[in-house]
Image (cartoon, rainbow, N blue to C red; front, side):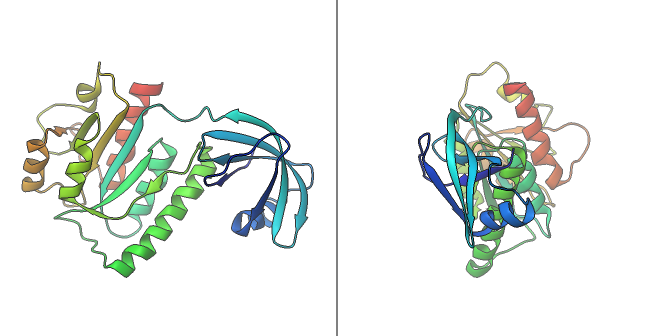
Length: 244
């Protein structure tokens, strides 16, 4: 069933919902849905609203709520992905796959070895694009909410924020044998954050700073993964360890 998101809204059974903008166009023109067809609206309150289409107007779709049920797809564990800025469309791939694999939020990080550097205008443009990708990925995979892609932060700010999570670690090719399972195994936690470096890897002084704040270095095995592969790989491990 198609799913659409409305921010900060609460509805009851029999309420009328108006969908406008790109979503209305997608429902009527792309999906070619008709009066009486069913779709789901999800809000930030963690509820799914099962709806039927009542009518189409030139710029909106009118729905009636048939049933209200809790969204059952989200984990109780909040996963924060801290991804160093990477060039080209790799960042878009990371965001899309992170949303599909259960990330709660994504922080782009300006790292020492990041090739991509953004000024304020470039950052605004990228953030708009990245959050649109997150929205589309959340729709596609049936998420219960849309994860946020935050403003770009420094590595120092990244370390501070990671330290606030119950469990935190960074992926490092020079890590000595400790794995993701070693870090999270047997622990009870409600939040976890991890950092993935850019194409050139984690700089030594960044690794030292992270360790000095109690953030552990982990290895992803003997193979060297591309930066756009490492994040989704870690999320898959977390998904297996915590939900499957």
